[in-house]
Image (tube, rainbow, N blue to C red):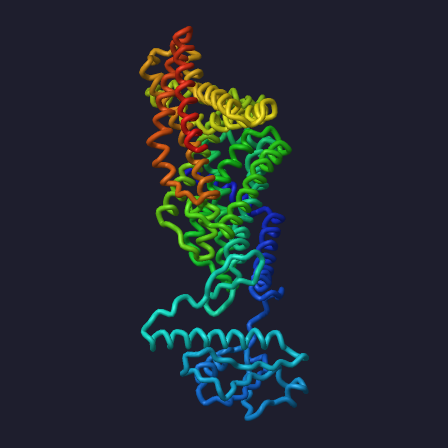
Length: 564
């Protein structure tokens, strides 16, 4: 309940800020006013702002020569924008005087009972309402065409297939039919999802004010002195920020639907946005808490938000132009599919919601732990290395230290992989520059790379062995070292799966099965041997580490020989 009290306090500060609320209302109204114009631009090729719904404001003449056109006439009569005038012959004089916006000629050879394509003619005045008349008549003709297609399908008792095909072409008026309206596929799959992320990217100022603003205003002391636990303060602030940004996303979804732009699965889109908001705001909260002042917090969030925005643009671009099944597990791509109506796996949706939610709660927990350090709240701020060492020491002091050691090895795996990849790329560039590209230089590069990987994978073992611990023995060290190898393998396989899916269309599951049977076994064995070597040290340790590197290198050479 005390968390809710903090959340209510923060929400009231946001809602009582007149400048912010005026800006929020203005940007929402501007968005809802301009979004349909861009939808019309991509679907019809012309930029048109939305207008109020007017009844019978377009005078249109109808010349009926056919005796088999009931469906088309009924569709025209249902169109509330048209005021119809029936003529026995073409009303060219009325058209020239501007008394009507145009007239539709239904020729004698128009037969709705026949299975062939039919044509009607529209003559427009160049004076009044010509574009509006064209849009209105086109709407009625397309509705009549859809109705006739359904009737023919029922009459033939056969499936005629999809009448509308979706083509992916950049900035082309490729349209999707939704409820009698036309929408650009680029607009639905790319721009609308991009717009739905705007509240998230505009939340940085709120996060900075809620966290760093307390430090600058010197109100953090009074808040800490209040009868609240620090984790309740952080959780309450996170809850208020997440609630406001997620409610803003809900308002934008409802507004977009209200102005006639379809969102195929609004509930799924909202849940995905809520989970993404939770993770991003949790990370922003931790960064703001670690920042010394407003300037540093702004820089930290900019460094965080810019790559996130680039990743969003890249993911939506890949989803639109070159969709892959693997990308259904990327939250940005899944949101695009939920908006545009593309199919996606329910298991992928459930998995993403679970992973994003657990990750957000974990980051909030990290931020809460940071808030208990007075050097973070009041200064001097500790370094990242100091925080990492303290976190590992706290984990290893847990009542089940072996489990803590395994968790440490897994948590360090992404950082170990990135560091080894950076070093290996630098070494490869240097070797190619010095020795050129040849088989000996390739073998040398493999040995150096494996030595780098096996050395860095020993980081958790090194941290554990820094102090004497009663539970440390050969068996526990071998287990934790094997876990470090498995974590390295998982990160490497995930990256390889993304590249294989993008470049060669290789299914991720196929790649995983192949690597589990070969590469995983190698990583487990080599890392265990290297870990035991670090435990023994001395000559035995050097021999075991050399054995691990040699086994790893020979395996890679064998793989390279098969590939080459």
